[in-house]
Length: 105
Image (cartoon, rainbow, N blue to C red; front, side, top):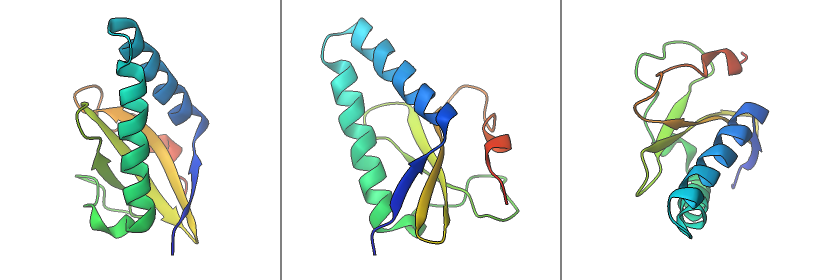
């Protein structure tokens, strides 16, 4: 069963900011970022438990993350019922765990 994605508003803003940044550094790179993020989300939708629990996360709901190919970003998410809740498109080397307040039990 494929999960329906729901993106946290702050995660949506992160995604758009990163896409704009990549597009301003090199034409077409923003589109490539969009493509790679979309592929990562698609993989997660089909098999959300394939990726590990976020390091140090020890409570419910179980939060996982998947790396975005080519770019230094991770899709941070959890599943509730049949919904894939994306809480962050997190840069891998900036402020780890800043998104934790977006996860509600």
